[in-house]
Length: 495
Image (cartoon, rainbow, N blue to C red; front, side, top):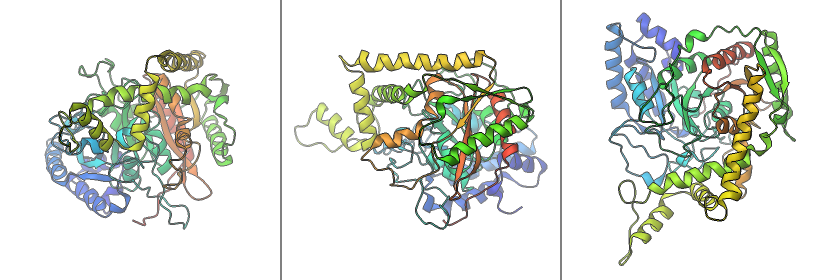
């Protein structure tokens, strides 16, 4: 078998079990692809020695007949996950040199299942961004191009390195995290599948925190079946995370029947935005028609507080970030600024943070500190929390009417060029999250499925939002949509 790195998780797993290929061969194929793809800047800390060691151990496990689904499969880990003895910087200068003495719960579960870590993936600094342009490592670059145009495009953010690596076949799958759309938006931009599970489904322990009540880890994969396989390994109760749900994890792959007859799919009228590109509108209409053809009932629904979601999100997320990022002070770990004669602890904090945090992180920390300050706490933060409750209730009311899933666009546009959304107006960049932030505010599962190409040949995605804790049902609806769409486009190799 040639070009083993182009396999998906399910195909590779079956080939490993059949003895057609070894994990070492799979891993070497991916490592070669990674070394040839430096132009994408997706992998920022390569770990070939760890990868080969784990691949050999996985081959022994498979031979012994004791191998879970993920055993022997090479994957990438987003730089937000702490990995023992391997740099874990959250793409920030302030964590320069930080090599944790522990492993995040999710990456540990994947390792325990025999998955092979190829290295750490690029991302926006502290997961703050929608275009992977705030990273200390430099921009991650999408493997896709607009027609014959050579302009570099964004793979989306914050999980941009994960998206680029999976789309370009550098790894079979990757971990991502999603605070306001950071799995689903990049997945849509590069034509792959990404699922954000229900808040509490995956442990947050050992993942560098951005906004603790919104962050959730999830898989980024080549198709829905692969997402089901990897998600099952990533989920599970963790006593080290107080928000982790003590719920049994079903066999998500076994739930992929593709049968959605009688399912009710809601179409929210509030997601019809002014100025939405006609291509996105058509994609949405076509997606609904395909689900209807598959036997689902399409119903119009209303989520009346949607218009307040972005402002509420951009109060709550920075508020939590300003609290979480206060721990980076140059005292115990990470980078410490050079101090002048006579500098005290206050100067050390100020200089370390001024050097260590990039402009976007500084902007969000300042916004967060402002909305939490005396005199503004009630006007901004408490009001945003009340709006969040109303947004959550909108979804509860809709699901109470028997709706099984909600279909929306994943992004308001296709991928854009790096540098095209200037820093002059950060709000333009924040608008990229318009279809995704409601899912985080309500703690719901959401999945992005590639559904077509725009006129310039760039991928576009559709989002399905599910009931809490019903990822299996959501994945099955996504599977039916994936089968109907038949998306097989891949980027032409230029790197």
